[in-house]
Every structure is written in structure tokens, then in C-alpha cells.
Length: 437
Image (cartoon, rainbow, N blue to C red; front, side, top):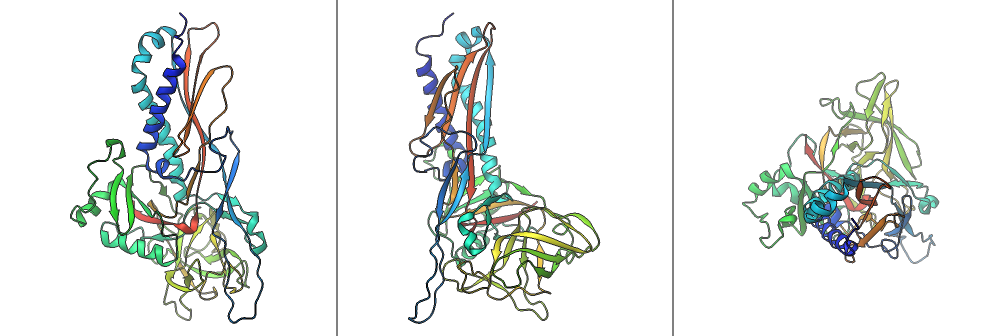
């Protein structure tokens, strides 16, 4: 039996409805900045890349005698590196007599499955340890960066369960100098009831929200808050999961004693000897105060290079093993105490004997701002020789592809929904919220 002549119109209708369901049901997909000039509207494939601007950085010199400095455009690449599909198979009889009448239900189920895969991948940016080549900053000695935050709030032991703690997290976030537009917070669903109870239901859900937008919680301290059951878990290495004080390392050396571009730190491991996976990529640690014979070290504000109240917190970019009692860790961000470098960010030089505490395994929430969570989701090409329909949401830039067809000579009809995407979270405009396991 021939397919009805209006099948393409039917598929396009299904696809638009499913794309809307995808955007309204997953908070990271919905909120990610997907608007790139001439990218999401074009046809793309895996591996295609787009770049976006980061805030330029300068230093200020005193007096009226000028000191010329280079203007460098900071950009960050975003590559469509991920792909997923949900495919169903039907006989011709099933498709014609049963499936079309039930396609909306099949479509919703397919979008839940595909959306969960995409959403959970976006959430991985919170603990990501993937480095990104950044040649534009090579003149300043910075040859790579990475997606996701290096700053954090919480110790992995004390629960975050009150408005007061969220307010303090936001204060720390802003004190560093993060972009203060479009501030959003994402909390593990299981932690929300205690926070709501602490605020006497101030986190009231907007009763006019669609049921599909149940992840919207409300607004507090000039931040919009959301909940998710797909936030990632950071599994710490042996140092982070050790009992205090065995989770505290002592600094031995840095890769750059001049303090221009410190990208690796070597510490003593309290356990000593040789230990596998003493640090895991994505682990967080903080330099601690009041160490005998050492100055307390603070971050400078990201713009202006003034001393903030924020302790120095860094993220391990790779797994690291302890050898001979010491462990060398690649870090984000690069640390600098050279005041002529635009990446100047420390109040005092790092010296041997300083100590840092590593966080234990934890569930990771997020604060981000400035529309700096980027997602590329361009439309895919036609899947020749199969009938293909592609829809790009004009407001968000999100795209999915539907294609369908039969295996020649067999009573098998396949219906495919697929998408490609990539994502990146700008480190300086994000902070990890640490929820105990």
C-alpha cells in the first residue's frame, strides 16, 4: 500500500511538537545560548566548529606615562562533537494502521529518551575535564582552557539546605566579578525540599507555568533557580575521599616560579608512597588560611585585578597518581602573580609549604551568568535516499532531524529522530555548588 501523499506534512507537524517538548522539558537545553550567527541555521556535521568571544582583559598602569599593551581577542571554540538517535522499526501495516494515530505518544517518549541523553551531556560541563585549544591566548602563555567552573561553594560534607547558604554562594560568585546578567542556579532535585522549607515556601512555583516546565523553582537574590535530576556526580580521588587531615596536601613547587603562567602544581600526598588515582580529573581543591609561616592567598577580581575575599580554588584537569609521595596536578585556571600580565589573578606568590584541601565525591549543582553556557545544535543534512524533515526552532536555535524509509524488499519501516550538538560553559562565569553524596 502506498504511503499517503500528506505524510511529509504529518511528519513535520510531529517534529515541531517534539522539538517544543524537548525545549520545554529540559532546563539546560532550554537555557543554553544557542544563537550563533549563521551556524545553527546552516547544515552541519559532526566536527564542525564555531567560536564565540570572551571578555578581553587588560591591566591598569599608574600615572600618565603610557605603557602600550597588546589587545587580544579572547575566543572559545565550540565543536559539535556529540550525536544521538532514537530509532523505531515498524511493519508497513503497523505504520499505516496503528502508528500514525499514536505518533504523538511515540514522539513524546522518544523526546524524553533523546532529551535525557542531550541534557545529561550538557550537565557534564559542570565537572568537565576536557581541555580546549585556545591559541588566541598563546601570547600570554595560556595555550589551553577548559569548559566548566573551577570555583565552588560547599565542602562536600555540610549539606546546602537553606536560603542563607544560597545567598552566600551568590555573594561569593559576584565578589569575584562574574557577569551579573541572567544569573541562574541549578539544584539537585533531591535537595530542593529542604531549601524550600527553610524559606517558608518562598520558592513558590509560578502557577501559570506549563506542567512541562516543572523544573522552574522561582527567583531569589536576583537569581532564577531550577531543579534537575540529571546533575552529574564527581567521584574524587583517594586524597579527596580521605578523612581529614589526610585530605590536605602541602605545596612543593609550581611549573613556573616566575608566576607568569602556573599550570601545574606539585604537592605532597599525605598518604605518601605510590597511589593510583590520588587525584581525579574534575577534582576541586582550595588553598587554606592560617598556615604557619605562609601568607593567606586570595583571588583578584576577574576584571580590575583588585583583591577579593575569595580563597584560591582550582580544578584538576586530569587524573594524577602519587609517585614517591608527591603528586603533580594540571590545573584550571592558570595562576599568575605577575602584575603586568592581563591574566594576573593572585594576591601573593605561591610558595612551598602552602596547603590545599581536596573536596570529596559529591553531587554537582551550578550557578552561571551572562548567558555563558553555550550549545551548538545545528541542523543535519538530508539522509538520502530517505525522506528527511528538519526543523530549527527560530527562537532558540535548537534542531532535530526526522527521517524514515523502508528496507528494500522487506516489510520493515524505520523512523529515526536524531541530533548533533556540542556545549561549553565559560569557567569564569560559573561556580559549582557542592552537595554531599
